Amino acid sequence: MAQQNDWDEWLTIASTVHNNHTNSTLGMTPNEALFGYCPNLYPRTSVDTPNEMVENCLGLLEQK
Image (cartoon, rainbow, N blue to C red; front, side, top):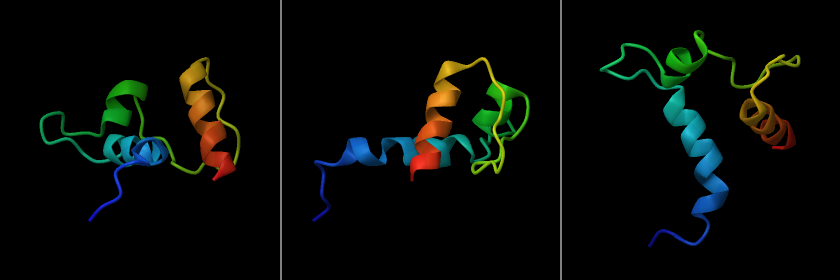
């Protein structure tokens, strides 16, 4: 039986994978639709962005 009490720990990873998968309706990934390009999931250098949520997500990715 699957463990269901740790979903919040997997939410960031699940949303990242989902947003990087090509959507059949859009013909592009949700990331491409939102940002205008397909961002590298693991950037080697800092990405300058005024989007605070993106900055927070990048910080989480750097910790993992």
